[in-house]
Image (cartoon, rainbow, N blue to C red; front, top):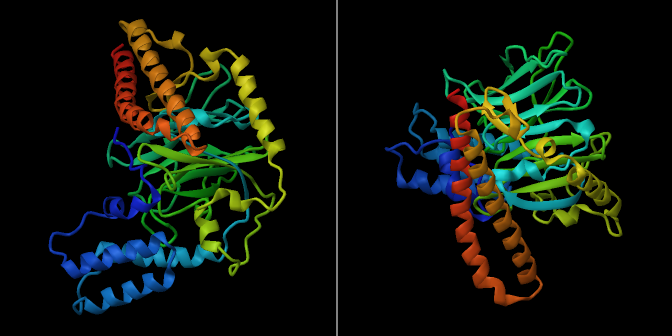
Amino acid sequence: MKRKNITILAIAMVAVFGSVYAAKPKARTANADRLYEEGLEAVMLYDIEKLDDVIERWEGILKKGAQTPQELRTLQNRSVAINNMLGRVENIKVVEWLKVDTALFFEKYRLSADAGNLGGTFEETTFTPSSGTEIFYTVEDDSTGNLVIRHADILDDGTRQEGRTLDLGTEKESDKAYPFMAADGTTLYFADNADTQSSLGGYDIYMTRRDESGKYLEPTNIGMPYNSPGNDFMFVIDEGTGLGWWATDRNAADGEVSIYVFIPNENRINYDADVEGIKELAFLTSPEATLPDGFNAAEYLQRLDNIENSNKTADKSTSRFSISLGNGVIYTSPSQFHGSDARAYLENYQKAQKKLEEALNSVESMRSAYASGDLSVRAKIVEIEKNIDKLRSEFIAKRNALIANELKR
């Protein structure tokens, strides 16, 4: 399974965007290269005036009748999207923000039982509503190589019917992943990396609804602050706690993603377009700026603590264990593995997972100490971070070996 480009410090995104959007044509001039980089910098800053100036200058050097380069079309699309979205940035309250390892990111989602169940892997996510009557999952389409979202009904006896690929509009050649069906049973959120006039770049979060026949309406980009020039995905609304979640690689280091927990509005409330700091609010440069003076998030954080405490007292074999074998097949208990040498492969996987989690917890504790003024831990932080890259690779290798062994049955 190909791994998607979910990475990067926000200040380094410009260096990556060339691979996100399109490969550079061999014949492109140095002047065009320079304009492209200028344009990407403007996109990162939501600087419409500079971006439009770059586009105008680039259009001015094109030969009459020449085909518009893909990179120029990308900048044109970004200009349209930023113009449209900056005028309607939703006013939300972000009550918690986390930086977590990409390989384990949705284990950090603390959802109530009513919200359903997230599972699978980072590359192939799955979502099962609390009803247990259907499942949404991400797989790679054999014919195109693109990620697609499939849906299957689950019968009363637990039998799953054959899955079908959802027609979610937008660009057919893009990747679609990270599905979540809301509690109303009709509203589907997902991520799509189509390069269109409705996209800010990378994965953007979209919303659609299905009608009584099961057909999905044309998806709508949910805008800012949820979407950014980076990758934004795994949007969830938990009505049980009254909180929403989404993940993004903006404001996160390589190998990590940021997770934002927020209070959803019953009806969308946007900032005034000319409010001071609108670009920073749109990018979530400082999540705490979304909270009004004197706002107390303790009540909402307590709801998350209650979920976490509930999970700790539950049977770990059913509450936290989740591995996707592909095509929407998920094991939620170690007892489901029956392949040859399954026990040995499972033990190796769990040991690798434990080592990675311990290292991540350790470095997070040291980062907190460093932020509080203990400079003596700096060298240790660097040492552990180097080891985390190795542990992450080992964890993924052991997980893949466990899955491969099971599929041999």
